[in-house]
Image (cartoon, rainbow, N blue to C red):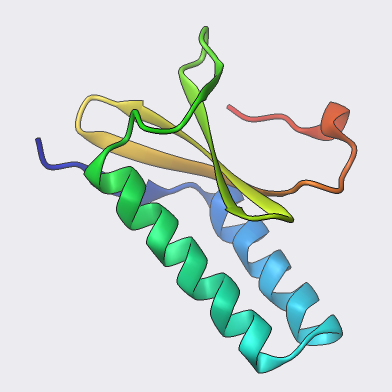
Length: 99
């Protein structure tokens, strides 16, 4: 089955926020590594969307660890994969609200 990856506005915003943080605190090498890891994670999800653990059975939300500091939350609806958010794992988990 061929899946289509769709970015929510929240995913775009949180991805860009992570990049901005890395630009401010780290080097280009770290930024490139994060981008590459995110692309690899999305490719893996696209190839096998049910590979990663479900964190909300009711909502069908999965969690993929991109790097130690950032997880990608997503859900599969039919042939579409919705990227929900790139969550910094050092944040208070009570603030995490995925669709």
